[in-house]
Length: 134
Image 1 (cartoon, helix red, strand yellow):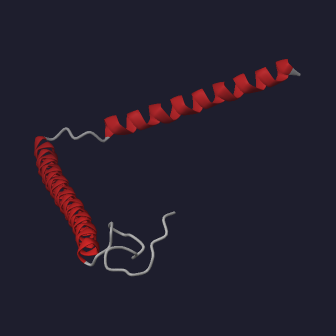
Image 2 (cartoon, rainbow, N blue to C red; image 1 turned 180 degrees about the vertical axis):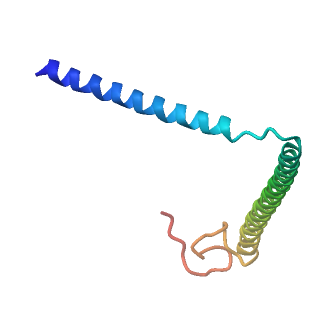
């Protein structure tokens, strides 16, 4: 059974190789018969080739401009992101400074209103209630 499978495989590969060789030979002969031998026609074909090359150059230039525009857009987005991060950092620092000022003011106010220590329970200098030490 293995031998018959191998024989089938090799016969298919051989058939494929023969078909491909025939098709390639036919295509090659078609190319040779359709080549232009006249100089006027060859000049016309060369002119078309020049037009195609100029079109390719224009497409390459457009692709380069598109790439530069994309890079500029990415750079602008990166600048915007950097601005947003800097703004967020500044806001965070301002908030921390404000909280520190509030803590300091609360400490000063608690001493000014007669509390014995900052954030105490209220029994202190101006309180006539007895203070219970814990």
